[in-house]
Length: 101
Image (cartoon, rainbow, N blue to C red; front, side, top):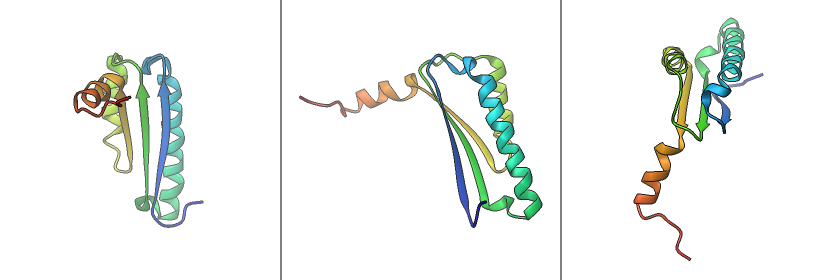
């Protein structure tokens, strides 16, 4: 049961790429949609926000996954965020934040 404003994070780690766990991600999304439906019946849907955050080792992904993410992000209270190592590691290293021994 949720009381008041809440944020629900579902974290997914795609060690072998997002396409390998795409079905699992979709199943989690479906569970969140069902939860949102229950919240709508109680009138508290506007107080709960859901995010699926996907971390992947690889930048590659299928067009189906890409289109699905855009479609999901049209939902008012559900967001899907996808990050891969090429998005943060190069910038992290360039900004001079490397550890010095």
